[in-house]
Length: 190
Image 1: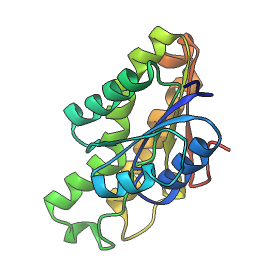
Image 2: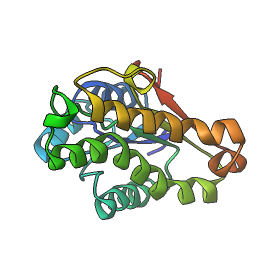
Image 3: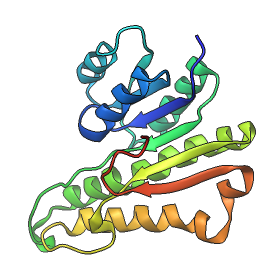
């Protein structure tokens, strides 16, 4: 089957990720989705009859699993035109000093490390294709801090900084025809 573009979406089991997957599949895009909960992915894959939504269970906070999602997407479709890093979650609304070390680690892993891993796994593919787009979901808290959400804010600040560096300096992916950018909670793919 011929697809308009191939889009890989992390954090696709609900919210913006789910909506983007359904929206794109209905319009003729090949879509690979990943999240930790396979049953939700399978449900989403069945929502659009006659379209291709490829569900893949993966925890993008773990390098091997992030790499596996990207590799399996490329094997399934032969290319990846868009990576939509949509993973993110607040851990617990509380003062920073009250967070456990595990909560701090999880907050940074979900909100920043998953983006870095997704980008690292896909950039060489996009460079070899000579094109590609990376969209990283962030938050207004990537621009402004909010008490009670310090780790989430730190993670989203990291995503903003990482995503704008290649655009500002013309480095890395941009020199090879790829683009990276952020989405502050609006539907990024039309």
